[in-house]
Length: 444
Image 1 (cartoon, helix red, strand yellow):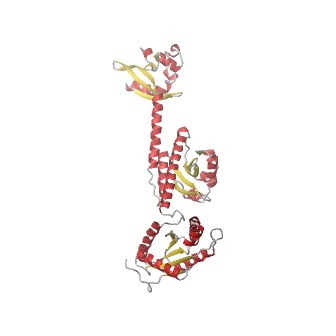
Image 2 (cartoon, rainbow, N blue to C red):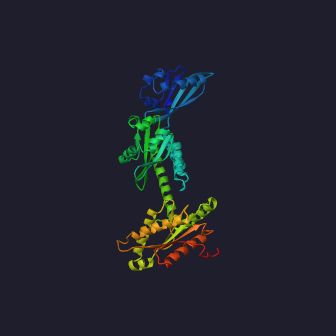
Image 3 (cartoon, helix red, strand yellow):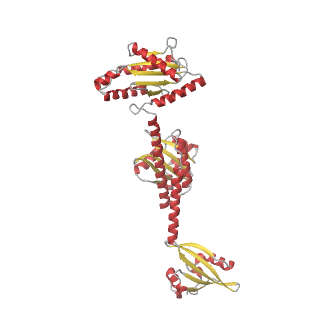
């Protein structure tokens, strides 16, 4: 009967002696029936490692299961007591090869974990208003799904790396990260070109900052955009980590998913910028200007601090277009936009208002200060040469101040426009301030 069973089976006495074996077990054990019969199972592998459960099955008069590895195979072992009357006289031990099932289970668990990683990280809320919060949320989820306790994100800047998010590190280590002490290490990772760079205890101990932090394992995963490395995701541990193929796959998947999200953040930011930017000049567009104007009026009404606007128009721009062509006109508009950006204050909001008109919101600025700032910009432009030294440009402009010259946005724009109209009528190349006493503002 035993030989008819495909699975290896051995019968033992209650004291552990082998009394019967089937053919499958002989092939499994690599011995003959004569060699094994009568031997103590504790001296025979793999029975020896099962003795505790065999003994428990005999004395407890109940079946036991155990999973063991034999070489590259996995077996589920079924230990069953054989009763004669009320006593256990023998026990059967059956070995069932479940390697294929274990492989399927492992693949399922791996894919489940991959799905969990992807879904968890992809649920990161993307907002352009606070990108650091996005990265903090993302890093928190990375640490959760990878079981690491330490991590940070270092993005490449123009001159150095900027640490945008970090977790699980000491105050001193934070200072070291912020001061760029690991930038050389980041460059070493990136130059290697590896999709995953690992530092284990002997290598980590050579990096003073990591050693002082108690880190013994560091994984650096490149973050890419259009095949270019834009930064690194770094995961660290203060206890040794067993690095194997599954761990490498998990970290690579995490890095790829984070790269996609960081790229999505970048594209989202670009989309937001495009929505408020004039495509020709790179200045803010009219929609953003109106939004800013409304906010400044609300702020002034709340805090009683004035602000001004400067409306600037290129003199004789139609003649320039007719003489040199519209492409030359576009080049002049771009050049003047650059000059405006260079010479305005960091708090000023500069927008392209119309074809050849520009408007500047001068926050916390009274009329006289606004007038001097606009005149300075006008003077800078007049000394510049455009279109390869062929053309000189001049501006005319009007200044209006809120609430001195107007009670709402419409009146303020009208006031600046009237002042600019007077500057044109006065011979151009002039900046004039609106005078409410001598002008009648139409009713809203």
